[in-house]
Picture 1 (spheres, rainbow, N blue to C red):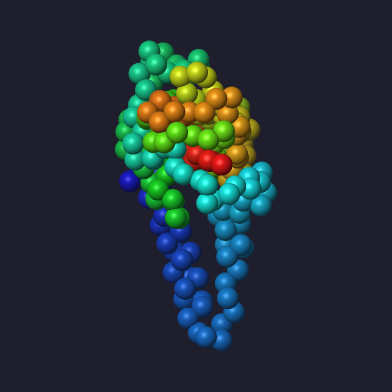
Picture 2 (cartoon, helix red, strand yellow):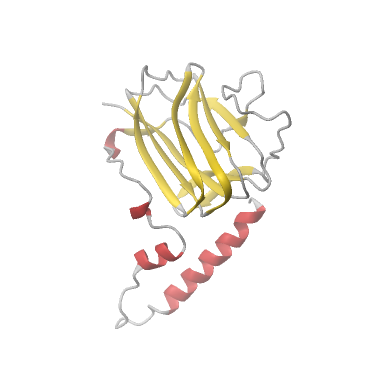
Length: 205
């Protein structure tokens, strides 16, 4: 587990215990989970998450356990610093976040990240991206993107500082991604912040 995330889950665990304790009686009112989520930045209502996706036609294009660091020679992004300092299992790694096994990135231990893996399946005409960030501190912006060898297929620049937010977007592709084709995930940030790639999905008709 990435060290910084341990403290987050201690907080979530305490909230869960308190919520359970407060609802042990059959006569107790149900907890307002939306209030709890808002307290911890987990409310997507204000995050711009507006994708409406047919889940029956959604298949994972990537697997968050299979990302590998990209060498400079194949990195398709042009903002790579001369020295990259992002050790596995400290700067980035898999992390369970609620129901999702995510790719977590901690930028106080990671100054730049581009990772890649072969696409698991042929994509349809679009992909679906779910991405989460905790409250962002510092100045400037963060750049998060997904690319293939042919170029960037999705990217967002997130202002810093910023409240926590969930990004869900369906992205139309200029050309389908073929199974086995390299898919790149990229994150570059100013400040010491926490990000989670939840899913890159393929939407097939």
